[in-house]
Length: 162
Ligand SMILES: [Zn+2]
Image (cartoon, rainbow, N blue to C red; front, side, top):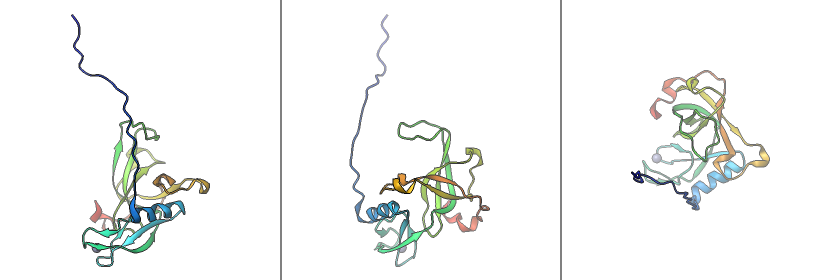
Protein backbone atom coordinates (compact mmCIF):
# COMPACT_ATOMS: atom_id res chain seq x y z
CA UNK A 1 0.00 0.00 0.00
CA UNK A 2 1.25 3.46 -0.89
CA UNK A 3 1.20 6.07 1.88
CA UNK A 4 -0.80 9.16 0.95
CA UNK A 5 1.12 12.43 0.68
CA UNK A 6 0.16 14.52 3.70
CA UNK A 7 2.57 17.39 3.35
CA UNK A 8 5.41 18.68 1.26
CA UNK A 9 8.33 20.96 2.01
CA UNK A 10 9.07 23.67 -0.51
CA UNK A 11 11.65 26.42 -0.33
CA UNK A 12 10.08 29.84 -0.24
CA UNK A 13 11.62 33.27 -0.20
CA UNK A 14 9.98 36.60 0.37
CA UNK A 15 11.82 39.84 -0.35
CA UNK A 16 10.44 43.25 0.38
CA UNK A 17 11.61 46.79 0.97
CA UNK A 18 10.59 48.64 4.10
CA UNK A 19 9.90 52.35 3.73
CA UNK A 20 10.17 53.82 7.21
CA UNK A 21 8.62 57.24 6.63
CA UNK A 22 9.81 60.59 7.95
CA UNK A 23 9.60 60.00 11.72
CA UNK A 24 11.14 56.54 11.72
CA UNK A 25 13.83 57.69 9.25
CA UNK A 26 14.94 60.34 11.73
CA UNK A 27 14.93 57.72 14.48
CA UNK A 28 17.09 55.38 12.40
CA UNK A 29 19.50 58.19 11.44
CA UNK A 30 19.81 58.93 15.16
CA UNK A 31 20.65 55.29 15.83
CA UNK A 32 23.46 55.57 13.25
CA UNK A 33 24.84 58.41 15.42
CA UNK A 34 24.61 56.41 18.65
CA UNK A 35 21.49 58.31 19.72
CA UNK A 36 18.00 57.09 20.57
CA UNK A 37 15.55 59.76 19.47
CA UNK A 38 11.97 59.98 20.60
CA UNK A 39 9.26 62.51 19.85
CA UNK A 40 7.25 64.21 22.56
CA UNK A 41 3.53 64.80 22.22
CA UNK A 42 2.83 68.54 22.70
CA UNK A 43 -0.45 67.70 24.42
CA UNK A 44 0.07 64.73 26.78
CA UNK A 45 3.91 65.03 26.85
CA UNK A 46 4.33 61.30 26.27
CA UNK A 47 7.64 60.50 24.52
CA UNK A 48 7.29 57.96 21.73
CA UNK A 49 10.28 55.75 20.88
CA UNK A 50 10.66 55.01 18.04
CA UNK A 51 8.99 58.18 16.91
CA UNK A 52 5.78 57.66 14.96
CA UNK A 53 5.13 61.22 13.89
CA UNK A 54 1.93 61.58 15.86
CA UNK A 55 0.32 60.79 19.17
CA UNK A 56 -2.42 58.16 18.79
CA UNK A 57 -4.05 59.30 22.04
CA UNK A 58 -4.24 63.01 21.23
CA UNK A 59 -4.31 62.79 17.41
CA UNK A 60 -1.72 65.55 17.05
CA UNK A 61 1.66 65.61 15.29
CA UNK A 62 4.73 64.95 17.45
CA UNK A 63 7.54 67.08 16.12
CA UNK A 64 9.71 67.92 19.12
CA UNK A 65 12.57 65.44 19.23
CA UNK A 66 14.10 64.38 22.49
CA UNK A 67 17.03 62.12 23.25
CA UNK A 68 16.21 59.22 25.52
CA UNK A 69 18.79 57.16 27.36
CA UNK A 70 20.08 53.81 26.19
CA UNK A 71 19.33 52.42 29.64
CA UNK A 72 15.97 51.38 30.95
CA UNK A 73 13.75 49.03 32.91
CA UNK A 74 12.35 45.65 31.86
CA UNK A 75 8.58 46.10 31.84
CA UNK A 76 7.68 42.63 30.64
CA UNK A 77 9.41 39.84 28.76
CA UNK A 78 9.06 36.47 27.10
CA UNK A 79 11.46 33.58 26.72
CA UNK A 80 12.08 32.46 23.15
CA UNK A 81 12.60 28.73 22.74
CA UNK A 82 11.74 28.35 19.06
CA UNK A 83 14.58 28.68 16.55
CA UNK A 84 14.32 31.19 13.75
CA UNK A 85 16.49 31.40 10.68
CA UNK A 86 17.09 35.11 11.13
CA UNK A 87 17.87 35.08 14.84
CA UNK A 88 21.47 34.36 15.76
CA UNK A 89 21.05 34.26 19.54
CA UNK A 90 21.50 30.98 21.34
CA UNK A 91 18.24 29.47 22.57
CA UNK A 92 16.57 30.03 24.92
CA UNK A 93 16.84 33.80 25.22
CA UNK A 94 14.64 36.62 26.46
CA UNK A 95 12.89 39.34 24.49
CA UNK A 96 11.78 42.25 26.60
CA UNK A 97 9.74 45.39 26.55
CA UNK A 98 12.13 47.95 27.97
CA UNK A 99 11.03 51.35 29.21
CA UNK A 100 14.03 53.47 28.21
CA UNK A 101 14.87 56.27 30.63
CA UNK A 102 13.07 59.35 29.32
CA UNK A 103 10.62 57.40 27.14
CA UNK A 104 6.87 57.13 27.57
CA UNK A 105 6.35 53.76 25.89
CA UNK A 106 8.39 50.55 26.05
CA UNK A 107 10.89 49.56 23.40
CA UNK A 108 11.23 45.93 22.29
CA UNK A 109 14.61 44.22 22.09
CA UNK A 110 16.61 41.11 23.00
CA UNK A 111 18.22 40.61 26.41
CA UNK A 112 21.56 38.87 26.73
CA UNK A 113 24.18 38.42 29.42
CA UNK A 114 22.01 36.45 31.83
CA UNK A 115 20.16 33.16 32.08
CA UNK A 116 16.49 33.34 31.01
CA UNK A 117 15.35 32.38 34.53
CA UNK A 118 17.14 35.46 35.89
CA UNK A 119 15.10 37.91 33.82
CA UNK A 120 12.50 39.79 35.85
CA UNK A 121 10.21 42.78 35.66
CA UNK A 122 11.89 45.88 37.05
CA UNK A 123 15.37 44.73 36.07
CA UNK A 124 17.62 47.57 34.95
CA UNK A 125 19.34 47.08 31.60
CA UNK A 126 21.48 49.03 29.14
CA UNK A 127 22.04 48.84 25.42
CA UNK A 128 25.04 47.05 23.97
CA UNK A 129 25.86 48.84 20.72
CA UNK A 130 27.86 47.53 17.81
CA UNK A 131 31.33 49.09 17.45
CA UNK A 132 31.17 52.73 16.27
CA UNK A 133 32.52 51.91 12.79
CA UNK A 134 29.61 49.50 12.29
CA UNK A 135 26.84 51.87 13.36
CA UNK A 136 24.17 52.26 10.71
CA UNK A 137 20.55 53.37 10.32
CA UNK A 138 19.22 50.06 11.60
CA UNK A 139 17.95 48.81 14.94
CA UNK A 140 20.64 46.12 14.60
CA UNK A 141 23.11 48.85 15.63
CA UNK A 142 21.94 47.95 19.11
CA UNK A 143 23.04 44.33 19.43
CA UNK A 144 20.99 43.69 22.53
CA UNK A 145 20.38 44.88 26.06
CA UNK A 146 22.31 43.53 29.05
CA UNK A 147 21.87 43.90 32.81
CA UNK A 148 23.27 47.23 34.03
CA UNK A 149 23.88 46.01 37.56
CA UNK A 150 21.71 48.75 39.07
CA UNK A 151 19.11 47.82 41.71
CA UNK A 152 15.70 46.86 40.30
CA UNK A 153 13.30 49.71 39.63
CA UNK A 154 10.24 50.16 41.83
CA UNK A 155 6.97 48.94 40.27
CA UNK A 156 5.53 52.47 40.51
CA UNK A 157 8.11 53.69 37.98
CA UNK A 158 7.06 51.28 35.21
CA UNK A 159 3.86 49.54 36.36
CA UNK A 160 1.54 51.43 34.01
CA UNK A 161 3.33 49.83 31.06
CA UNK A 162 2.98 46.18 32.11
ZN1 LIG B 1 -0.53 62.88 23.28
